[in-house]
Length: 434
Image (cartoon, rainbow, N blue to C red; front, side, top):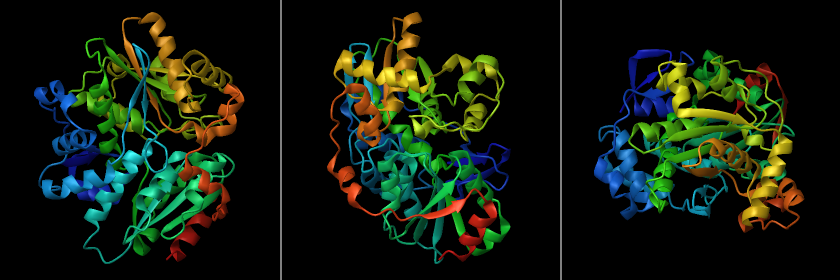
C-alpha cells in the first residue's frame, strides 16, 4: 500500500510513514495510491463472515503483505475489533447501525483502537516516545484516550474546546491519566484543530518530539471505519432494495470511509451527508462553492466543525469534480430545534432512544425518502444516547440508562490543563512536555 499527499500526488509514501507522521509536510492529507476492489464472491457470501473476518478481508485488500504481514495484521484486527456493530430495524426500510458498543461508547472506537494497535506495531523498535496530538469536538478524545491508554512508547495529548463537549464526554478524556494528557482550550474545535495542524508543521517542535495525529486526518483512522459499512450490509435481510447510508458528519472522516467502501465494491445507492447547523458541505453540494466558516455550537457537538479536514479527501476521490461528487452524496443540515423533534419522533414512533447525532441522520433520511420511496436507509448511530442525557431525557420524558463504564466517570476528578486560544502558549508548553 502506497500513499500520496493530496497536495503532492506524484510522491509516494509507505503506510508506516503515513500512519506515524499523520500529516504530510505540505499540509495535505495522505490518500491510497489506489483503492482495490474486493472479490465479488466475498460480497455475495458476506453473510457467512464474522465482523472480525470482514475487517480482516477489507484491511488485507487495502494493506499489502509488505506493509503489514498477515501474521501481524490478524492480531491487530482481533485486538481492535472485538465488539459488535448491530443493525436495529425500526421498519423494513429503516435501520439503525449502532456504532456505540465499544469502550468509549462511540463509533470512533473502531478507528482509535485499530490506529493504536497499528501505531504500536510500527513503533516497536523506536527508542524515542511518539507524541500523538489530537483535537476533539466530543467523542474522538475519549475513543483515542481509551484506545492508547498505557500503550508503551506512546503519549497522547488531547485538545478540546472548553464548555463545548458534554459533561460525560469531558470526563472520558480528562480522567484517564497515565500517558493521556487533556488540554482544555478557550476556543472552538476549529481552533483546537488549527493548533494541532500548525504543530505538525513547526520545525522547533519536530526537533523536540516525534509527533503524529490521531484525528481522522490520519489514514489509520479511515481504514477501519470502512469495516462497519460492510458489516451493516451483511446484516440486511433485503439486499435488493437500493441502500442509502445517512451519515451524521462533522470532520467527514466517517463519510469518506463510506465512499472508500463503495469504491471497494460495496453496493451503495446513495450517501447522505447529514449535518447540524454547521452545514458547509451540504451547501457545497447544493452550490458547488466550498466556503468554510467558524463553527457554531449545537446539541450534536461532535459535528460542530466549520472547516472539515476530510473534505480534501472527498474532493480528491472525485478529482475535484462537483458534478461527480453530488451524484453519490447529497447534503442536508438541521438546527437544534429540528434535532430535538427528531429525538422525540424516533422515540414516539419506534420506542427507540436516539442521540442528537443519530437524530440528524434520521431526519436527513426521512426527508430523502419522501422523494425516493423505493430505497432503504441505514442511519449511523454514532454515540450512546446517555452521553447526551439531559438533551435526550428532556425530549423523551424517560430516564436513559447510563452504561456502568460511563456512570463510573461521574465521581472521577477532571484533570486538564487550561490554555487560551494561543498557539504560542501551547507550543511553549509542548516543548517542555515530557
